[in-house]
Length: 281
Image (cartoon, rainbow, N blue to C red; front, top):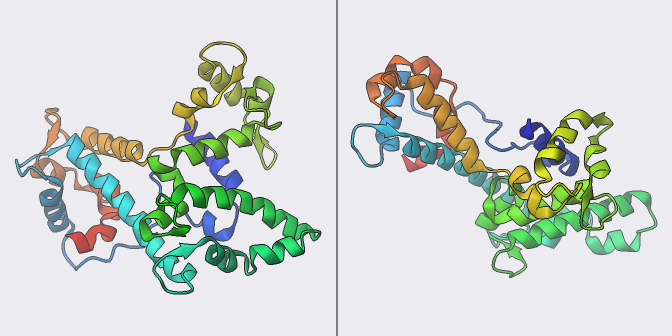
């Protein structure tokens, strides 16, 4: 159920068309794989060799989780590369905040401030506060520009530990309605998205999160609940596949076990996401 609230929070903040064309933790919109024509079993054989990094003839849980995590990262990087072309107006392979604003809102921050009496300009200026915060968190070398790696963090902050503090601050602010740095039970349970209330669920979660039972929540109490994790999603998918495939329950997979359960792998993240790692193969 935690993912339900994460979806609410993510949708609440990320509201324009470009941002809605995204994935949540471990969930991607993926076009059909672009791979050479080959039988599915042959592809599984190819993946097996790549995933089995210690070449012992078995795929272990950590090897499978690591592969899936790399595919998630690869998709994020692929998306960032495409968007970099759109936003990098001066073609220096980096994105400035001004370039991002101009391409996203078709205006400049200066023009918006000059027309701040206009309702739409006021609305965009409010959005820019979060955009600027996200940009600054992603700008790891503080040069005022985002490299491809930094731009990936900027576009997919929900997926990376490097952006954890930004995600926490953004999510915390969604609940902390009066901005006093704490979240009361009323603030927490009254949270809704587009009029959809989750009051019963949030009451239960508040009780679980309020470890010192003082009827308020601080940032550290929310940290383990709100922080998304791409690694956790990869681990979950790896565990699911291991449970489906490990017929002798020895905690590792042989190629024969995988081929015997090939139908379970056909729609798995291992196969669907491998398109983005094809160049690395």
